Image (cartoon, rainbow, N blue to C red):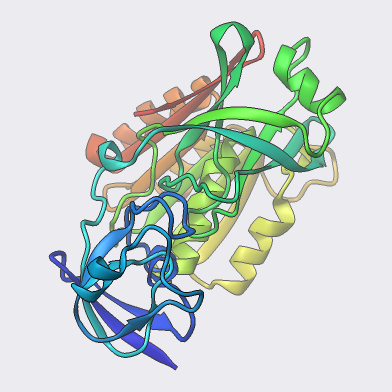
Length: 341
């Protein structure tokens, strides 16, 4: 059974399943509520119930007094619907409204996705959550005020862990630690979220072009779009040197198989003799398939040379600046810069 929730003042309407928190339902459907701990303590998700009935399965949250509860205030990270609702909450409409936090994390798992790419899952303290938009990045804080920036590969609705795809940089200080020294339960400090490369609210068809681990933020974006049920055409182009560098090829193929509106086009610059797919530079494959790009939103993430070539070529194909979004990954001295334009 589900209930309808009318959100004011935005006028958004969402469906909330039985025993699902109102915050979970909002995030699942692409509505950005403010939140912090997700455990009913911090009070960040405070709003009001204007009409209808809610309950708290685990009793009244610590961050909400009985008086406030009686006056209609609610903590939506814990509240579940018992009827159709009209609620009032200040939705987040811009990245400037999301709090940047410095938090301790623990490595929950390390998994090699390719010989030089490691999936790192970070677990936050039980009383904390990091609110972010699909496509943003975090900084890993290191000694001597040094930082390493990595894009978040998970979608905001699925924030129990923070997922990073880290490429091993030769002689790199931090990535060397990731591949050779860090273990599960190792502690790291992070700061974020950062970046203006994030999924925009738009019904336009989308071209997503990634190079190498530039796949990471696109993964978060696509998973968010699938979860929201927005079935606009999505064309995912992933450029790499060899097939083993397409470290999540099976996942991308599964998206394309299960969702008829998603098309996956891998492109290899140094293929072996058995490769049957596209070859060359990934941005050239995009232009060959879409010589007129004026109706698209385009998201690009990966090496600067790929992004720069894409910007120049796509503008010539009719793509305007307002529909072009990029995240340039620059590797040097073990630094990964994730810059959203």
